[in-house]
Image 1: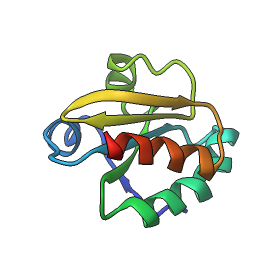
Image 2: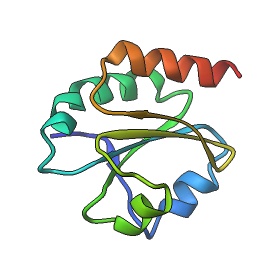
Image 3: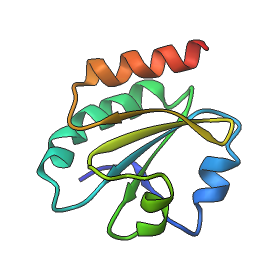
Length: 109
């Protein structure tokens, strides 16, 4: 099981939109096999990037309003926020390398 922080409708604005550092959101569902496959990569990203950004998980079944407001149509979807706005996304199961390269490019901007 993940040791990442789970957020929902009640704390999304405070933790994501008002964050002064970039935020990575992992939109997932418990029943999603590709989401489960990505957990080790997300955990590794969290360990490596936690000093530069916040990383949270949002369960689309528990927080459908958030998922709908960002047009999450497929999971897993990773959405990267900067200054309270989404700036990039990764849809589908990808490797740690793909995620880390994307995050590094966002952090360098």
